[in-house]
Length: 318
Ligand SMILES: [Zn+2]
Ligand SMILES: [Zn+2]
Image (tube, rainbow, N blue to C red; front, side, top):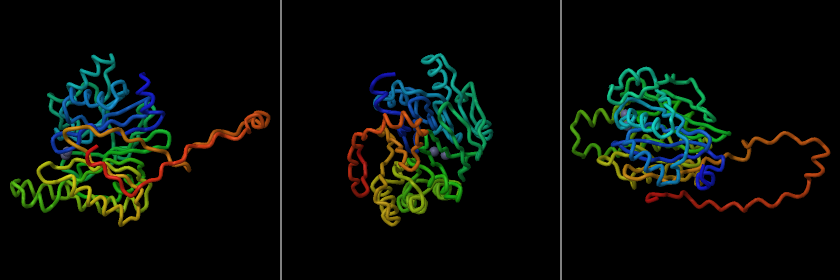
């Protein structure tokens, strides 16, 4: 493992949105010991080169967790499977629901498929993975939360409406990748055929900026969310400025000026985001035996002064 790699993870959970949008989605989540790709909807070459660009060339890919069968989420599965086998000598598992597996064509079907069930968590190395059902026009689509050492991250995209379950999951995360698919005005005035517009707007389609912002507002009002990546933006029917404005207004309404907003991109990868574990969730080490305690009771060096957090920071361009 390289020094850069060590410095990047530092035993923390990191989230890197490698690509996000209607033409392909892929997010890396890992803690340095284990890592998963959530979806693989861009080419294998793009996945690996984008990981390398942000210092994740040596980051472990222990598995791929697939949300649903649409090609912008699974297109690379078959090729990626073989490429990782070549690179590491291991055939990694691809996790997906039964419905998703049934709908994959032979062209994209990976060799080693493991079943997941919404509501049933499972372990991939040091990571706990929680699939949650979402309303979308796939056969059996899910969102995923990934946790390690008290830190929690998740990818919640491709859903036509919010549900209580989804909101509870969102509120439980430190870092969330959340769908802000379209701006209703741009969609309705845009060139898509009427039927497609209706499909996108349906309860099994995609979240509009407005719907996503309402969901986000409720989640940040009660939850611990600190970093939010607006994701799966339609290039045709949305603009990053519009999505960011809707999300910004939502966190302001929730009086959560500490929440940082980022915007996922189709053509480039975002810098990795670390999921900090709040102090109240840091696991305290077991008390030392008395004699050792006395020896170690010298004053601790002062912790680094925290950097003051400015009002909602938007990283539209990086
Ligand atoms: Zn999609
Ligand atoms: Zn989809």
